[in-house]
Image 1 (cartoon, one colour):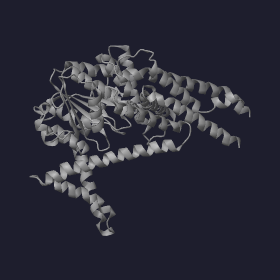
Image 2 (image 1 turned 45 degrees about the horizontal axis):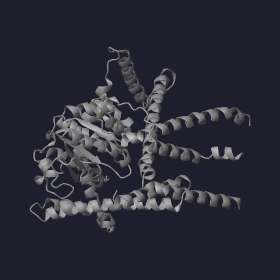
Image 3 (image 1 turned 90 degrees about the vertical axis):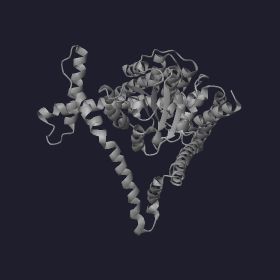
Image 4 (image 1 turned 135 degrees about the horizontal axis):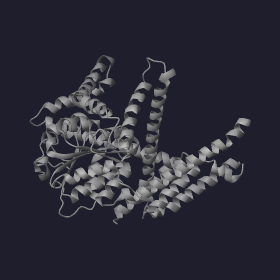
Length: 278
Length: 227
């Protein structure tokens, strides 16, 4: 076999081309078109209908390894809430998640307007042990369940929490499913069904097809699926960020994989007769 | 950019390159990163756990409310599995509490959220005002029924019954294909997100070093293969 043939048969060639494509698209963005899906638009429309000063609850159950997929959606939502004067209240209840440091990292990274203050406009209530039971307790009695925020301040001293007593005081709940195998059912069971509060969800790409039935049935307001969902949300809110930057590399890599699949099939069918004759 | 930000940028880019080295072949740099990640994640979970036990359990129990002490004691019983055989059954108590609380909390709305609403959404009119709407509803209704029939084992899937079964299988294969495509998207994101740290300053300074190490590894392996 020739040297070129040997190289082409090495699967690592696909990795190298993927790495180069992704890097090239990040260094020189192509500006490929991106459309906003209905699932993202419904979330945006709902957020737009919420009056300023309302509370947005956020389930920030990220893991270190899933944060690259969820981070852009989270940052976009945070920036949008700051811009629209919506109170941004985070909790995480999943024992497997590492939400606390990641939320604090976003609070440090995002350029926050000077007039917006921690504890007044946004807060991280930290980890509440107990998973779904903790979520149920939080929904029933916010002040009794989250006694202190993630920085150790008693929530009685936080102005943002003054009028937040139960889940009924939230205008929207936004769940982030960054934990492997995590799905939005617990938010539906503990928030949407008992309190009739709208629930939106952001998830990893791999689990999005299993969550879409909840969007179709109207139980979830909408879905931000991985970086693409984040990029769409950035686009519709007019605040472009990391999600939009990565979309070109995603599109290029998908196109490349399509080509590889087509070429592989052509090669397989082309050499089948030869194999059968042998 | 502060010196600390520059340093963290270099570390992030360096770790990313070390992790990607697995694409060439398994090596000690990759294993080092793997161990660093497992150690960091485990260490974080242990610290959070201990902090919660201290602040929500021990500190509160020493105050006016003694109830958290009960939770701490029940939680400690989890370690009874390491005790002598006669005491190991005690480890089942916290498990029973955990399962009971978990089921109790979730069961109250599970039927409404996951069964009734989903069944209701599959009961759609087959003829709507628009052609696309009708086609969409027909696909949902027929697809759901055929997929359910695929898992109905009381009738042999031959003759007339083979058709709904085959349609159900085809629908499931489409769903698996969609999942596979989305998983690929997720994997690319886990490549592109750290790639941003690599291609930008100061991480970009590590690219030539990474390439030199890669070419050296290729040269050394090819030399070994020749021998």
